[in-house]
Image (tube, rainbow, N blue to C red; front, top):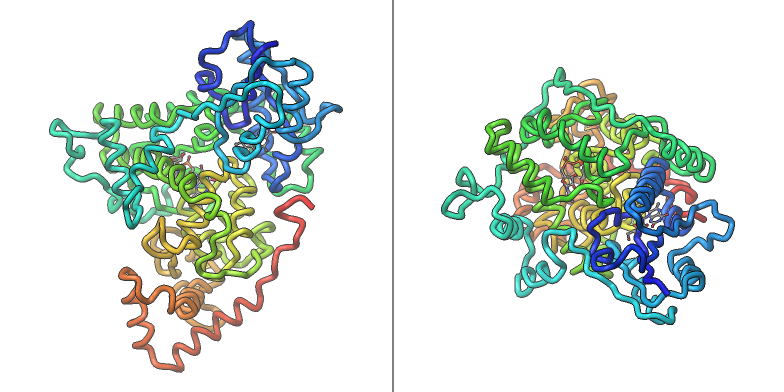
Length: 518
Ligand code: FAD
Ligand code: DLZ
Ligand code: SF4
């Protein structure tokens, strides 16, 4: 029989390792739309539509190239609903001589693949996914023997390994490895970069959108603004204007937030990179070109490259190093339910409402919105890590556990106890006010610390620090916070805690039906 090559939804790359060395007439490519994957969390409607549409377009391209593709549609009456059962069914149809698969990006799915050898009568070959710049082993070698893992040192090694932004002596271009300090310009409210329209859905995408609207009506999110690139060609078309027209300002405004500005100077490319439609190293090299051509300054180009060559590679290595423990870690013992307003957007906190609206409409939010607003709030009120994880995994078009979990659990919630981040990312209204225009017309005041009008972030910040004193006080980077707290007189401290407690008592927990399919 032929060789079977299952290609998963985020493996949409023509040079996939499992395709190399196979022949078109000796192979059957298997692609599966399965119920389990569309519902293991209740993904945003746009996320499901994006993945299914990109899968269908990719299958069509492969067929045009002369491959035989066995494509299982979600509404195929014989569809059993899971990867493993579909692979078994395909094996009965094709009586394969072997199965070749590229390892899954997620631990959960890799567990399934690891069991296929026992289920099938043919040899199962699992190929390493080389679409990352550092292999899992590279990361393990780097981490081995280090007492603390910090992105910065890993990132420098990655710059050296790839030669990106190095000067003639092999040092960092411009003399510094990292221009993070120049990525924090306060935004002017009249900053309004041109909106990128994206792509009008073609017939194939419209079919998928209709399917999703019908089958996943109870999932979070709107399909109205669906404009994602669904092919490699489109993804490349979307990337080019970013490099020529937006990258130059990416550096300054990387951490800026403006009400209703859902794109700013970000690339908006994460969903397509994660699907395999764009190559991450090529994007870094393309950015570097803009620097050498004198079109974009170093702080912008380095900032962009750091996100991909640094953070993206780093969280992937970290994920595989820390799984499965990372999934259940809860160093701060956070137990609160996620507030209902994460799903409805109904809150009078203007920053949160805007981030949730953008998430609902676009299946996307800027990094700093995910971190400083949505994440910071969940940290401060002590939402249990699984509830936060399920939310992030569901609502973003770019969300896969390998990238979501390290960001949520380790970077935002400090649930890993500091393996990834040196301190919890806790911030009060002052910092939000500095980086955004949210506070000006909010019902709360960022300047008031206690009482009804005070921004909840202010009292929640102290509530958080106070209740985690034991765990955090010895942390070098936090110690000073406690001397400030201790310098306040006792009634003042009491006021903070009361304001926070009163606010916490108003939070309505999310109903169970939102995150996981029942
Ligand atoms: P840009 O600002 O243009 O950045 C360029 C690229 O850098 C991104 O496309 C992305 O590939 C990469 N990148 C930037 N930051 C990170 C990071 N922290 N980790 C990994 N890659 C990064 N990103 C995801 O792809 N999937 C997720 O599920 C996800 N969950 C997140 C959860 C939290 C709590 C936080 C704080 C961040 C999360 N991120 C996630 C990272 C980041 O927010 C998104 O990659 C980014 O907002 C995507 O928008 P963009 O393409 O316009 O990014
Ligand atoms: C996220 C997702 C969704 C919604 N649907 C599918 C699908 O129908 N078929 C598929 O092959 N993959 C899907 N995915 C992606 C997987 O859940 C998973 O993230 C990847 O296989 C990586 O482990
Ligand atoms: Fe958010 Fe507080 Fe500013 Fe309102 S005052 S927008 S709640 S940070």
